[in-house]
Length: 294
Image (cartoon, rainbow, N blue to C red):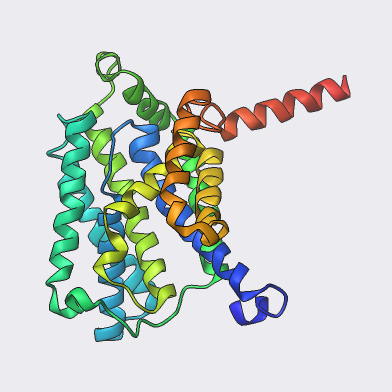
């Protein structure tokens, strides 16, 4: 598929579109944890690395079929998402952030010393099974299920937890169950994105999943708008393209990111599309259509 598309699209642009799709899968998972439920997770790269290494090791060393490897990586991330989700139920804000950072660093250091994963050298020779069609079909499916979730009773309960846990619990919402569920869904998408990344890049190393990767993903959620699917798409697209557009001034990239977030917090504290959801867009289009007909 990629070979066919490369006849009409520059391979460089095709690569960027694939990376946008992979990042979007990761960000949609983090958006459920942080944007929707309000749990500040700064270790999403940990789930990504678990999915990447598990699927890559199964493919390289055991010859496991790609789909099986991909799902296995996502399920390993789910197990750790569940394990991390339970003890963090009583944590919030800075304390939760510290725990998730610690989790991601433990995972990274583990892979630095994990012989089947190549230790600090990394793992190479991963078959390139990830392609444009697969990534974007998965993106469309995940966006659809995200939309259904956020516009369901469960989704409204998740938003209620973000706004006020005490009020949500007094309304009969099982906040413990839903917070763990948010971590599990986010971890699954993180592991899935990691597996796709590993099978696209040929080579992975622990340095690919460091603290700055988690911050980059969190910035995508914050920039687009917390809890907004259109916002996640916009934030992911902008911050995936930004490093490519700023290659000529690579040493100033972090300065640009910092300035962008400061400006955003001043003028749009909810993110660029923080108040926009698919449901709102559909309602506005419907009202416009009705007024035109009237």
